[in-house]
Length: 261
Image 1: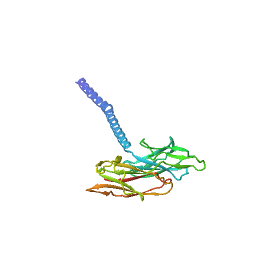
Image 2 (image 1 turned 180 degrees about the vertical axis):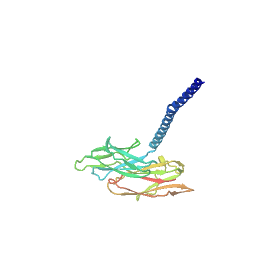
Image 3 (image 1 turned 30 degrees about the vertical axis):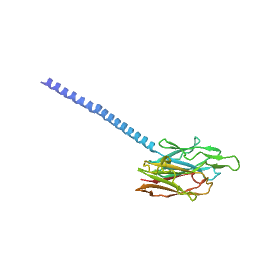
Image 4 (image 1 turned 60 degrees about the vertical axis):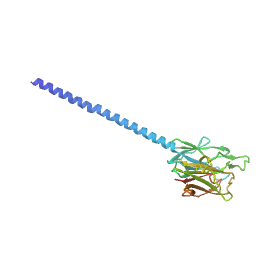
């Protein structure tokens, strides 16, 4: 009887040891594997969100000098996207000129100053964001004329007004007017289509180029964004927008954002 009792006790002890091994090794390993799976899924989700935000970044950048002969340039950065943007590098002809992080909120603008020592020739400005996107300045290449060594100066081929209309759907007309123009619509909708009765879906962009160089003299314009309501067109909220172009000393291309929703 005593021997049978000992065998029964040893069986119970063996079972308890097996259960102890199960709880101290296999189950913790299972928990660790589940945690690793959760971390992996979370990282995949974060990467997906980051990729989406990167694809949604959109900025407009225009470069202008402080004065015709000044080495100081200013970059007018407008965030036209729906996510905030952090500018981490400013490149001029593949050389870093500014590496101070500059945040730009959605639908807001900021100015980034840079200096070009001994300017000569043409310059292409590119901005890099924290998410890894690169955007070239939308204004045409800025050049410095050194034909006269004592009187060098900056020049740009054209001035303009870039218009962005935030839109879900609707029919629009866009007008740009100054004191010498007639009231004629320009760039009515995206791609300059002439049929103003076409229904537009999504954002609308158009640019009105201006032939005359400002040369430091202010040029004044008014931008009208009109949406069709019933049988007539009415100005959307916040328009007309007054625009002043001062070049140099101001951006050659002015961004106008209107909410047409």
